[in-house]
Image 1 (cartoon, rainbow, N blue to C red):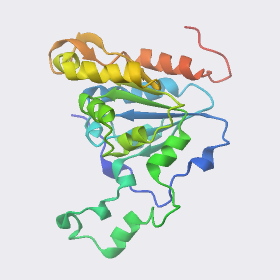
Image 2: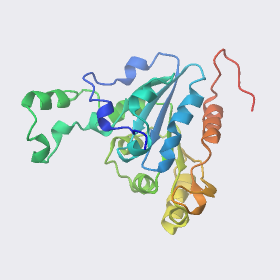
Image 3: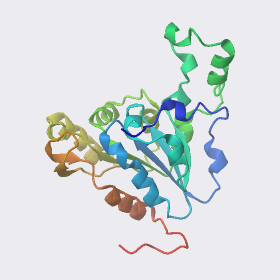
Length: 248
């Protein structure tokens, strides 16, 4: 099995991310996120396709479970237009753990370094800064678990905190991906209805029918990654390098 991403790939930065530092860069800001679905393996393809467009900046937010399906994060940082990766421990450093066992072998200096990114009122808060920075949030894939949490208003990781604090004047696009019976479950039907009919800032890129990773065949597979990219290109009016518009 090829190596996959790990939270340790991107240590907690010592300088806080500030949206204001990028407000005048003249770029379209795309916040791309992945949750714990095997369809997260498509993230490199989505990034490679977007890399040929000009004047865009991409930042990535990954849930911990999604890292099992994503290559080492340093590989993604080498893709053009990818300007940052943000993980749960960047918002909540390990030094803040309530589990004594996790801090037993850690020095006070190590803990101070990991928690120093937020020290006082007025300091940047990562999920708020990412919301301010982004022109669009694309969650591809969106797992059944994260879908349920979004509709329920949960904010127990970095991505969900961004969604909960979102400016509803800007779009959030989601590409659900799950087992067929999970997709067809009445709970999922009601949750998707909320996003499609009640929350106007959401765009649901509905899944397709195909052979799923689990071996089942049916609806629930994430929409084809190239179709997702085409939707983003059209929605955000992206231009190819050189300024020309890609022919559809």
